[in-house]
Length: 365
Image 1 (cartoon, rainbow, N blue to C red):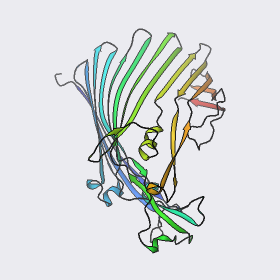
Image 2 (cartoon, one colour):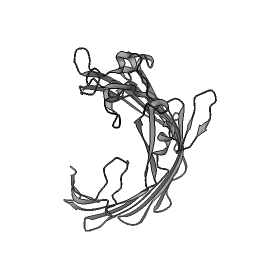
Image 3 (tube, rainbow, N blue to C red):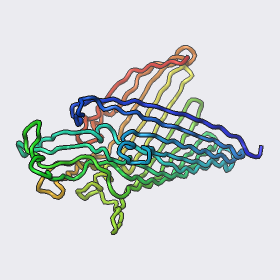
Image 4 (tube, rainbow, N blue to C red):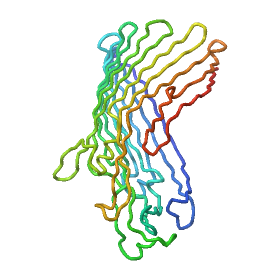
C-alpha cells in the first residue's frame, strides 16, 4: 500500500466546575462560580513505511472565561503536536517532536478577593484580587530523541528546548486610586495597596538534555540510570530586549528561574525472583535551588520585596519488597520512603520529608 497504514483516534471531553469559597469575590446573587469546559481531540498515526512513521495530534479546548472576556477567539485554545519516528536500523529509532501545551487560569487566580494583613504594620494590609482577563500560559517545545537496544542494554537520549509565555504570577503593588479604596469594607483596616495575578511580559526559555538507559544482565534483573540537565533564561519583551539567566537578583525573573533544579540523577535496581519475591531500590538526587518569597513593603519599589531562601541539594533513597500470589494475579508489598531519614524540604516553608513506610496491595483480573 503506497499510502501506508493509518490509525485515527478521535475524542471529546466535558467538565463541569462549581465552587463557592469564602476568599473568592462574592457574586451579587451569592451563587457559586460555575464553568462548563469542552475539548475535542484528534490524532492520526501514519506508518508511511516500515522505517518511517508520523504522528499528528490536535486538541482544542474551550474555556468559558476566556470566551466571556474575549481573551481568545471564541474562548478557544489550540494545542497541535507532531512527531516523526525513523528507524535507522532494527531497534535503533530517532524521534523528532514539536508541540504546544497550555494552562488556563484557575478559579483562585481569576476570582480571589482577600485582605492580607501586613505582619509588621498593624491595622494595615493589602487587597489581593484575581483577574478575569488573564491569558492562558502557553508552552512551545521541541525535542530530538534516540532510543536503541544493544543486546541487554537500552539507551535513551533526549535534547530539548522550550519557550513559555504568559506565565501567571502575582504582580506589583498598586496604590488605592481614591480615598474610598483606602479602607477595607469588611475589616475596617487601612488598605496600603492592591495586587493580584498578572501575566509576565516577555518569554522564558529552557534548554536541556537527558541521558538514561536500562541494563538487564540476568533474567528478572533490571538496572536503570537517568541524568538530566536543564538551564533556564528569560528574554524581555521591551524595545531594548535582552536575555538573562541571573538567579540572584531580587525580582520576579530571578524568582522564576532560581526554583528550577539544574541537575537530577536517578538510579534504580529491581530483582524479580523465581520465588515470587520482588525487590526494588531507588536513589534520587536533586541539586539545590533558591526560592524567592514575596512580602509587601510600601516603601520599596513596586511595594514588593523578594527574599531568597536556599534549598540545599538532597538525595532520597527508597526501597520496596513485594510478593506475588496466585500466578501473579495478586501482589502485596511494603515500600520504604526516604530510607536514610534525610529530613529535607522541597520548599523552604514546606514540611520536612521524613521516613515513611507504606503497605501496598494490588490485583489483576
